[in-house]
Length: 274
Length: 325
Ligand SMILES: Cc1ncc(C[n+]2csc(CCOP(=O)(O)OP(=O)(O)O)c2C)c(N)n1
Ligand SMILES: [Mg+2]
Image: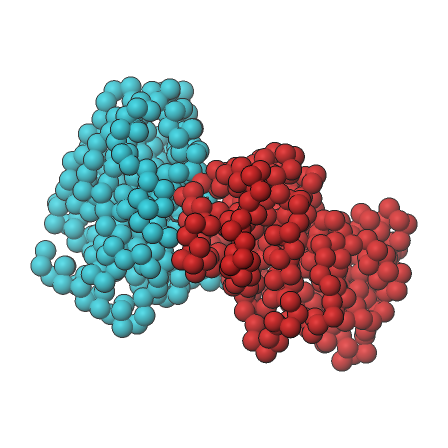
């Protein structure tokens, strides 16, 4: 896929994320928009996982630890053909499998998440199994920056380094916001690079809303032989919609009809100028 | 505080929690809220603004939250550790068991958006196990206030109680169950909301309301039901339970919890051990992949509704213990 095509995909994904959040009258808007480019690049060129090989033990695995931004994941999985996009019209409705967090009832979802701080330990186990079975799949997991104070992350970080899991790549969606306030004001976790390096990880940083840069850096995984990779992706919460960018309330804000139209206009403008 | 109650307007118990805590904090600097990026969901944003010195924020780290709360409580702080019930009573269960209950640090563990309040966010966000888990832990009071009055009373009492307390409530606006003017609220003392001798419907938290509505529906068919708000799951009001069991033909329990290990099983265990067998049914969430949807969808699906409870009551009244088997 060309960079231009990737950029088009990101804008299309963002439009669909908003569409289904508005339809469901619920969703985690800001964090879905901040991680859209990351999911786009992972599923369109980096990971070896498709509907056709989803039951193969050799597939790459993606585990979304920040489960609340499931709308981004569902939209990308639909685009990859894991299920018909129309299914998302039932998002959050009675008896729908498409709920507000990833569940394995939905084709393409690796693990049920939603309680923060669970993705990395599961990813570590999945990566250890890959080593034991001499498989060459990679395991990717996406964490929120607000999620990092969960102790389980740091326990898993130790295990990953101990087992030299260079088949594991953890990505932090560093949008610098959580629910209450900026992450630095809730529980400061900086400097992240030094922390993870001291835990034995190979660390790189990237503009997490730049598909070209993301693709380049993810191709470099493993960043160092014998070490798990950590990618700090600097992103903007609410990316792509002017009035949502860096605004706290869009963590789980649902746009009104007028706001929705404005957002679609802005994203269409992006598509036009590509 | 009965005179403060405005019976015409009612709100989610969560809001009453926040208002009560602010009122207590006005005159008591030892009132401390501990939060884990949960002050918004806990309606504690105004509390944090008014009393910035009385809120401790730990970030998204519930185990840490309960441990920190235990430490604060050991220094005579009146601590309200506030986070969604699902995370507090699953992830931080060991901290509740060891650092709070076993070590007797009188933390008030406040489980917000409990049961299936989070609806379509799914099982990660539901707490259908909290009564069961905490009932099996010594030295902690377990309660689920139903209306705004019970919530206000429970918070005030928790602040004074020298034992660990777990309180859980939801997000739905909850009408007053009755004029509460001359009642005294106590943990371990259930409230009779209406009286009748055909069936006792024993409920707690947000299920008391559909139980009351069901009783009204039954009344239309001349079936008189007793409805109990059994806000305290542990210690259970066995005196009240015995009394209603003696009076009523059948007993139905209703809770926003797994049918395993909660209010229903607590009542059943007591009655059976007293030799007080009656036609008995536990309504709650069955042991299956919980149906998806809003809290209302989930309640209706499992019969926790006016019609569902009335139907279950009629079926139960018409049976004997032998037939029930
Ligand atoms: C264990 C746990 N605690 C609390 C929550 C509630 N919660 C959902 S999202 C969120 C904030 C997450 O912030 P961050 O990780 O920065 O995510 P993002 O900014 O990417 O949306 C919180 C506290 C949760 N889902 N799981
Ligand atoms: Mg964030």
